[in-house]
Picture (cartoon, rainbow, N blue to C red):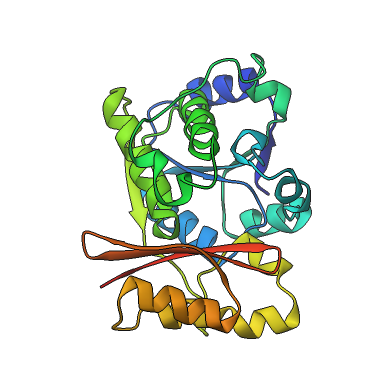
Amino acid sequence: MTRVIKNINEWRKIRKRIIGNKSLGFVPTMGALHEGHMSLIHKSKSENEITVVSIFINPTQFNNPEDLVNYPKTFNADLQKLTDAGVDYLFYPDYTELYPDNFKYEVNEKDLSKILCGTNRPGHFTGVLTVVMKLFNIIQADRAYFGEKDFQQYQLIKGMVDAFFLEIQIIPCPLIREPNGLAMSSRNVRLSTDERLMAPKFYQTMKSNSTDEEIKARLESEGFMVDYITTINNRRFGAVQLGKVRLIDNVEV
């Protein structure tokens, strides 16, 4: 069974005395694990002798309090999935363990974090970068794995690693989709039955051979609330609201 560690000092003893010089892969998550997460875990296991996953619903990256309250929490099911996948360790800290400073210290980025998802989610990426920096310093992994669904997040984390000379390799992994094309996300479980039927139109419209403005208009006519549709360097990025659920996606064009 996957061993659960809640304490930083306990993890550091394991890291030093048990793992030592063995290669260590790290998959940070907020839980509610799905096949997208599992693909990162399988990649880590194929490339490292030891794999550790973290589960921490990070409050500092939620600019919408309702979204934080409603974020799915499925610890027992998650632990079973990790055990079945052969994950060695689960790091499962609480807020006071990770934020003894109560978020007085933070990591900011001044450019990429201000566009796309950063435009209407002020402080979101500051929360992400801060918690990832903390986790990297605690876990001391050789490699960390991130999905390309959150492409902007991946680029920001890679930039942070380069800027602060962190000794960890950031491994991007392909976006995993449901059979209907919808990008897998922990938040998908909050979609109603009707929204579930409608949600795949987001990806289908995003990948069409149309302009960003045409795609935005088409999505709005279908009933989506569009945050942005923007193409940068041959990759189209989109974020929409469907009911109470925010969906993001990106496709190469």
